[in-house]
Length: 223
Image 1 (cartoon, helix red, strand yellow):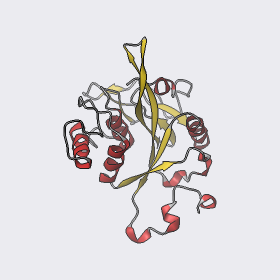
Image 2: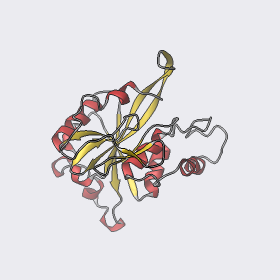
Image 3: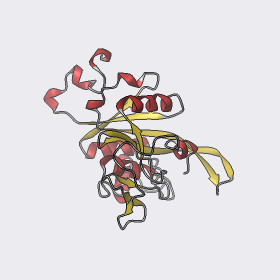
Image 4: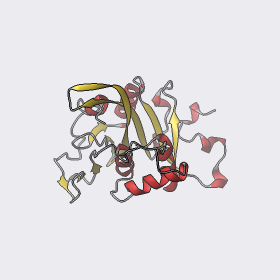
C-alpha cells in the first residue's frame, strides 16, 4: 500500500530538531525501531498502516495488536467473512470506524478536522496527537500503477518538544519542527486530498460543557 504522498511527506523536512537523529536500533521486532532519543517507530508490514499509526501515536509496541483490531472489526459488524472494516484477505487495511473505536478503548476520541479551516485555529496544547489519512496508489511491483487507490494511515505527534511525522512508510521518524512549522505542514497536507483527525483525551462527564466540546480550538474560534 505504498503511497507517493506517504513516501514524500518527510523527504523535504529537516532530519534534526536538536534532539539527535540517528539510524535507530532494532528492538528485536523486524519492523520496529527505538530511536536514540527515545522515539518509538513501527515500520510498514502488509496493509497494517492503521495498526502502526496507532502504536506510533501511543509510542508503544503493545498498545494494539492485529488480533485486537480484527476483533474490533467483528464487534462493529459481527461477521468474519467479507467484513466491511478490513481487507477481505486479512492483511489489515482498517477503515476509520476501527481507528475511532480503537481510540475509544484507550480513553481517547477522534475529531475530524474540516480541511476548509486554517489549522492555525487549533489549540495544540489540548490535542494528544494527530492521524492523517492519505491516498495510496496501488501498483504491481514499483512500475505498473493500478487503476484504483487505497488509503494510508499515519501518526503525527509532539515528542521531546518537537513535532514528528511517524509514518510507517518512512525509514525513521521525520522531525517537523516547532508549532508554527507544524501548522504550516498541516496546512499543506489539508490542501491535498488528505483527511486529518485530532486525537483527544476524553474529559470527565461533568466537564462536557460547550467550551470543553470544542477544546481543540483556540477560544476565539469556538462557537
